[in-house]
Length: 182
Image 1 (cartoon, rainbow, N blue to C red):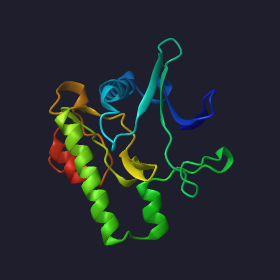
Image 2 (image 1 turned 180 degrees about the vertical axis):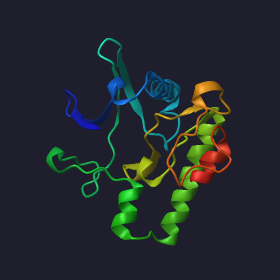
Image 3 (image 1 turned 135 degrees about the horizontal axis):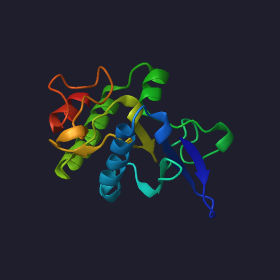
């Protein structure tokens, strides 16, 4: 993940995905399909990280996407590139040890509403975990959307993907697996 500034001074996050980092083309193509599916709806709910641009270079073997930048752990949206550390739920849990009950309830409600909207779009996330929940202007958002796919898809997109300890025992491909992870 890279931090970039555009010509008007706004900061954005940039993720570059290289084909060479995978043993085969299938995971690279799967992640690109996830970006293709998520980008059109990324601005349709306040709990989604906004995807601002996607680029692909077949010859060089990479694609990239530009998204809104997460809050800094200390300064929020006042980004200082030399000291930027993105705020996510995993870091908050590590820093605080545990969250107040009211915060947990609000996070649960916000993220459940976000998942409901994603599922209404006939998509699932497949990797809900604390490090994939970022904060933008204090709002929790689902990030790391490369594993997004169709609900009950078929073929190579319905594989056992995700993070151990957050995957539903029933397996992938259903909204229930995202709810389990949440």
